[in-house]
Image (cartoon, rainbow, N blue to C red; front, side, top):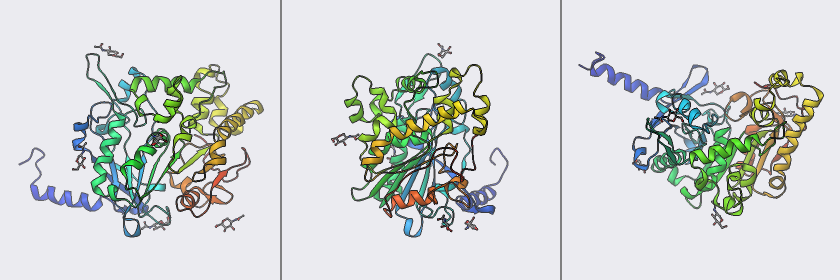
Length: 400
Ligand SMILES: *[C@@H]1O[C@H](CO)[C@@H](O)[C@H](O)[C@H]1NC(C)=O
Ligand SMILES: *[C@@H]1O[C@H](CO)[C@@H](O)[C@H](O)[C@H]1NC(C)=O
Ligand SMILES: *[C@@H]1O[C@H](CO)[C@@H](O)[C@H](O)[C@H]1NC(C)=O
Ligand SMILES: *[C@@H]1O[C@H](CO)[C@@H](O)[C@H](O)[C@H]1NC(C)=O
Ligand SMILES: *[C@@H]1O[C@H](CO)[C@@H](O)[C@H](O)[C@H]1NC(C)=O
């Protein structure tokens, strides 16, 4: 008798049921996918912040998509000092043990052709985020208590190694994608990704809300630069930044964590999906709490309609900074694509409402899913830039 008092046959039925439910669309077309823990990850020293094992969720492709792979990095901010990493290690952002074991697959991860027309039948993988440094660190913190593992780079490698024999190693087509901190991870790992795949495979990368700008805040402080500098130092990211970028920037190699500095060293076809008024960058890069101690931006941060004329001007400055950081890419990257819209959003590929739905955001009448698909399959050249706020009437998910 096992401790819970259930007989073996009952457990067997439960397991069969769980296996059957693994990837079934439930009522309301909800697709939930079970977690796979990488059991042998410890052999390469790949651990989450708290020492738990890395994990991913895989929903198998089918039909014409069975040989194609989409890998999506989960996002969720960063921890750039010991204190915040210790805190994070006790949450779902730092431990696979504290995560939900089933993930909803929506938007670009959906298996429904009418919700995700180009990637629905691919093998689709969500890589869980538990290192706090966009899958890019490699260090250990030890001061007598239990250690903090800064092993994002190893987590990335261990998951790839696990997927290679499952079919990734013989993929025909592949797309590495991710949103927010996961969008930053696609910039960090895009070149590396191509090296694991067959030479004749079509490999491309997509960053959603990951184009974090090297920007001065409204008080003329380089807040994001300071934040990322601490992150790179604490988590030992330097060797994992683009080596050609760091070689060319020997005085400030840390800046290569910023996509705008690393972009020209990425040869793989890349798609940049971002709002020009990205809500994270608005709230943490342009107007971090430290630059608004009197709370003058409080209402504007919650609702762009409540912004003063001057605040709107500063927001237009955010858009201008983004467009100028993308200028060379726009002009010269023949294989690149972009969709820079003007909605107050952060992450638009993972939620059905923004990815592909009736009334989802468009530029020139093209949805995000349609644009990304057209780019991936070379159906047309696409670099879409929206007109400035408030002209776009297809934005309906303004903040928060
Ligand atoms: C796919 O999505 C459409 C549109 O929401 C829905 O009508 C249909 O039932 C879904 N199909 C499956 C198999 O879930
Ligand atoms: C370890 O470091 C943390 C954060 O700096 C600190 O709070 C804690 O007291 C340290 N523990 C020991 C045993 O030094
Ligand atoms: C773990 O096992 C898988 C499947 O056998 C293998 O492909 C992978 O290389 C192993 N990972 C590590 C880190 O050794
Ligand atoms: C760096 O540049 C060299 C020469 O162009 C190239 O072979 C190599 O793949 C590049 N490395 C990365 C990480 O892009
Ligand atoms: C936009 O696309 C929809 C669906 O493809 C079409 O019905 C509509 O006529 C288009 N509108 C414009 C202004 O092109």
